[in-house]
Length: 204
Length: 204
DNA sequence: CCAAATCCTGACCGAACGGTCAGCTACGGT
DNA sequence: ACCGTAGCTGACCGTTCGGTCAGGATTTGG
Image: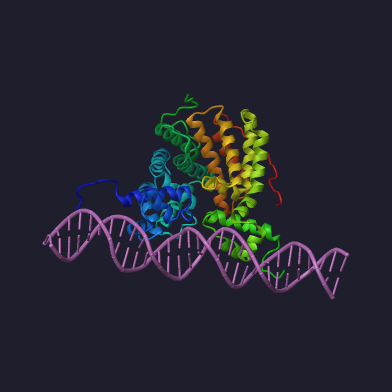
């Protein structure tokens, strides 16, 4: 059955192409025809591999949402601890780095796509995450810090992925994001960041 | 005159409804029929007031983009100064507070709508803004701080507009946003931020 | 060799899209 | 009374949408 792998699996390539187009144009704006053309297949072929446009979206998002559930399900109660929170931020940034496009869709189009099961799951996880942060101190200030940090980080990553410009090293971006989000989430103790902080270093 | 809800001018109400739907669903996802239904008019009536769907979007965004140009055009050179940068952040947050939905569209759908003139103008302004920030110190760290701050602030505002839980006072949100974005943009001088009470109430 | 399964496609469908147009009503100016 | 115009609408047009279906290739197993 699985003798040779001549090229990347069609379903996998379709997922990747669809994900890209769902971010560039929106889910509603990206048509099956565009996805098929971009992947080099016919529209019928797309619907052979995936029962519907919605199924294609779900199939493309499922790995990310599963990992999100794993990440939050395992450490949703331990965010209160100051030290472990830093570790969580690092994990979360890595999650965003791995699933830039998926995160972008969930964040920016999550509201209108809340009816789709996988999206709904993701939104529940995020709500639970926000709740575990807010249970400790639910001041407006704290909530805004968390919102700006997480949404801002996700946006910067997802946009840099689809856009031309920046070709910074991933490690640099990762370190900077971990630093700034840690600073936002835990305002008091910035100094305890174990990541190499490079303040104001010129690249050229 | 025997219509159900409309008290304001038809064109103005159509702009408002369209703006809301363009954010909730995307520009591509919101149809003229939906907009017309939501506003209590027929699709033909929408196209009587606005030449096309694109013209409707432009008409709805123009005030915000004009103000953005005014804001950036007048103060693109003084951002380098540390003290005036704080004032600029305050102005910018007020801009975001006044034009939440418009900012959300420009940020989240700007890439796919770059061909539309008004959107293009807005994106040029933002590029110039980022450039004026980056000219001083273009480290990866700094660029990410700015990106997270501005995008995060805009996202938090735009989402809170269409979402639940609005019991936060506007002034509280404003103060918190100004504080956190100032902290992100000017990492050194965090301690003393004087938030002047500027009336951000303007009838439109 | 044949049958079954896999992959892929063009032709086609009803619905919805953005947009055009002729015509309706209401009303102010003369 | 008349007319012009502003506001609004239903009917209609061509196109594209997501989705169905029958069937052409190609491979595989017996």
